Image (cartoon, rainbow, N blue to C red; front, side, top):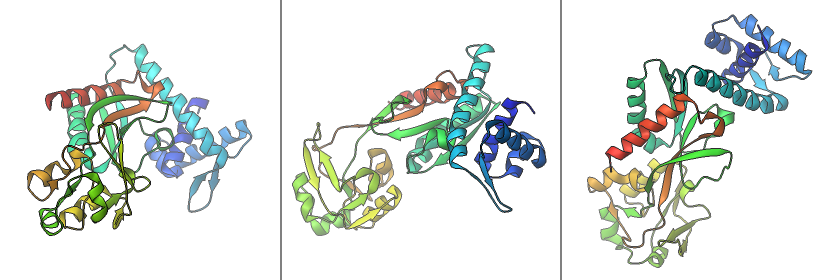
Amino acid sequence: MDRLDALRTFVAVAKHRSFSGAARQLHVSAAVASRAVSVLEEELGVALLHRTTRSVTLTPEGSAFVTRCREALDTLDDARRELQGGRAEPRGLLVVNAPVVFGRLHVLPIVSRVLRAHPALAVRLTLTDQIARLVEDGIDVAVRAGELTDSALLAVKLIEVRRMPVASPAYVAARGAPVAPADLSHHDLIGFDDFALGDEWRFGSEGQTTVRFKPRFVTNSVEAAIDAAVDGLGIARPLSYQVERPLAEGRLVRLLDGFDPPPVPISLVFQANRRGSPNVRALIEAAQGYFRERE
């Protein structure tokens, strides 16, 4: 097994946290996979993995090294595809990450388009409301809400959405509707930690009006926050796309119309060295086409 294969084996072992899982992915035996990593460790003069009879984990040195290995292997794979032609057919595995609600409503239909158009491509879609680390988690493309803060990533903006205060009709009937943002101090508020950092909501086109509050209910799940609002527990402030259905069905009503905060961009983000990847390009083009049709 040459050095490049050894690096791929190490990355696979780190991903699966086992030699048998890596061996199945690479179509080799577990013994071959184990020997390849051992030889790599001997060449580097450092232990990359902690091995026990029950688990395989990365050492601190291995954790740092696997990140660089993934970047290098991705760059090599993309360079090979470019040599085959600037519009090489997408193939292999594309790993995509997205927030739960947006992923179900929009990313899944986009992925379906890509899979139908490119038979040689496979996609692994992970849905989580926590911000994933692209390199460390082996993610090719992620959907992010908000301005990009990581300068090492590239972003392609798809749409803009707004944070929208909502409550159930029953809550409004019992407590009344706030007329201005300051009125929220007299209401029960529902906090979703990604959208209420510091227990603060901003309103107005430039975010000039700030409401600080102590939420009565806090959750790390936007779906739970929306369900709590539907159940009449208080006022939540999710993103507009997350409440399209309950608003249309009358289970929620929009509040404080006219005090809209600044729009929030929804973007696809990826590492700069994946710019030329046919797989990444296929997803971006499908996403752009999908949202153009919805304009």
